Structures are given as C-alpha cells and as structure tokens.
Amino acid sequence: MSNYHVSKDKESNQWRIKKEGAQRVSNFANTQREAEKLAKQFSANSGGGEVRIHGLDGKIRDSDTVPPGNDPFPPRDKKH
Image 1: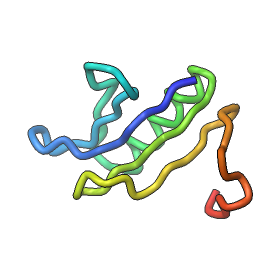
Image 2: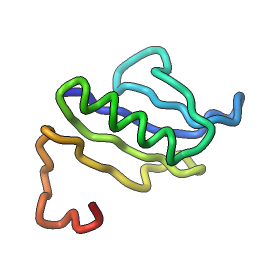
Image 3: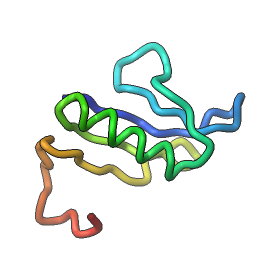
Image 4: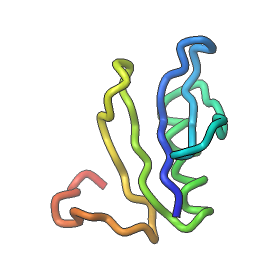
C-alpha cells in the first residue's frame, strides 16, 4: 500500500507526483488532473492507498482512496 502526494513544483512549474516518504519525485505532469491520474495509477499498482492533492498554497485540498486501500470514512466520501 502506497500513499502519493500531488503538488506544484515552483522551479519547473509542473505538477509533481511523490510517494510518501520518498526522497525523489516519482514523476511530473503538465496539469494537476494528469498528475492526479498518474498518482492514482501508481498507488493502484502498489496495492492501493491514499492520493492527497495539494492546492497552490501547499495545503491538502482533497484526498482520494485508491482501491483496494482502506477508506477510513467511507460513508462521508460522496464525491467519488
């Protein structure tokens, strides 16, 4: 199970996908939507987990559970 974070890289002006606890970035994408999609694929390939999407201010603005990960609040997640 692996968690990933999607955030804006100020130097390259691209969206980075980084595995939680990793030293290096997993990948870059031109758009946040594309980065989120890649992060979900990476997480699914490693057995599921959480994908946390950060806004331009760096704060987490959304979090999605990727199957077969365990969603701690399944009844409240009505968006997906």
